Image 1 (cartoon, rainbow, N blue to C red):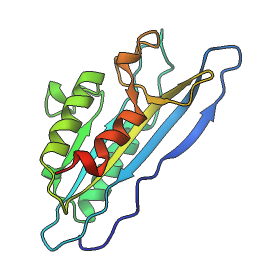
Image 2 (image 1 turned 30 degrees about the vertical axis):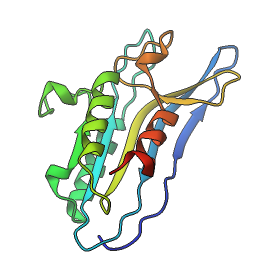
Image 3 (image 1 turned 60 degrees about the horizontal axis):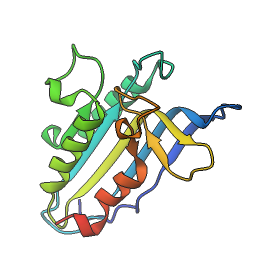
Image 4 (image 1 turned 90 degrees about the vertical axis):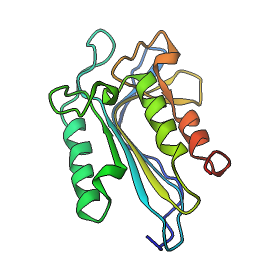
Length: 173
């Protein structure tokens, strides 16, 4: 954990432009953010979110996002992350530890805030989202789509700008 991790990055895997609509939809979005960590007692954390089974009135269902995040979780744990420091939210209710880990917009915000609030100065965190993302026409802002997405109500979306702000060094102890 003494190595310096790369700065925040965002990787978009597949993007589909929806011509004639007011927004663009990404079929699968995986955004990874890392905060640098150095120090002998630093801990590694991860916040992993997957949404696969969207309301078909809003967005198409996806096939592999949940498996991607669960495999990422296994990989992190196999590489030395403590299982209790990897928060996983997804929409398979039979596999979840509790209802608080259903990836609804409010739950995502709350769990990320809780996790970030417990970090110490030398800790590091990886944040990964797998699911749909949207960018509205003529706007620069990009959003992750939680399970309760309503495209007409932006409060149901997770702004990537909001995530970056939460991860900024000003907001981490």
